[in-house]
Length: 432
Image (cartoon, rainbow, N blue to C red):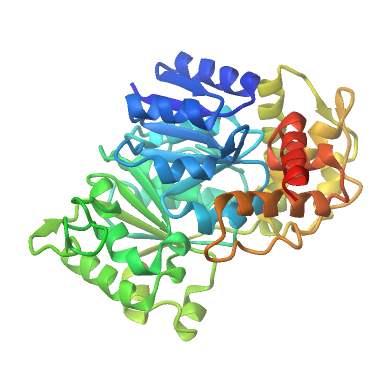
């Protein structure tokens, strides 16, 4: 049994999700504000924290700064659009997963399962493998590779464009492995350069200014489980050298320490780059590249498996219908319209398109989109030293500008209520 804390000001969303989690046999509490969340965390550290980005009394990112010793085993930030994930990643830091509203309950169940190994092997051809959807030959090959490598101790190197589902591959490998420890995801692009050694390997008390106590890094937190290093090519080259040393010796030392610690975590790495090109561009050490290439899994882009579009679209629609207790269906020609798009954002973009059309549909029929939006523009990455409140304001105003002032579309994209959006805009107006 796991403990889950949902922090979201949408009572219907939080209560509905909490009820489903409890039906799965887990304890679940909810909080609608940062203050309520802080009080809950003071009492107990949950196994899983599901945290909304925008709350009535501040940003969910502020809670990440306050967690301290009561850090949950897994933290998942809930956002309204995939572009927001990229925007907040540098502020949220590593070790954070993301879910995009509308959240599929099966995604949450999969995350719960990843906290301790479960296993669901099936040797037959299948239209889905956990949360990986698609019966195309390309995906069947991926499923087979997962089944082959999961029971071994081999390092896995997942390669694929952004939005193809690399973390889902890593989670599937973990669940199929039967490992007893947790699945720990780390985005290498979010690691602080000055503290990257401490974040990965931990540190001893007094090892540097501010090290008031001993700290366990991601390698220790993933003991007897799986450590997923996403965007490995964003890791500084000197740290890649240390990572290679750990992979070769299966031992590491905390910063400021002398005692070697056995590494019992299985490593899965991922990149959205061509690894060979990354080596040529000095983004990836050649020796580390060959060490990671023990078992590569190449995830195809969505445009290369158009036969899976209908299955994926129906999967997302079914999840929305289940979540909202409705029975909407695609209009004639909907799937054909999807076939005409190139899907630069891959499966993540498709999920967003289905969700948007679902929200915009007035009756029981979901109409095809008139056009496919380009990625959110004008949303530059947060500047170093920017406050969390300024980051949130920049995100909201950029999204509002992207939709030409359409507050309904802005709220839907951000995954917040219209009331919360209006309150934020009122605060900005009063403070200007």
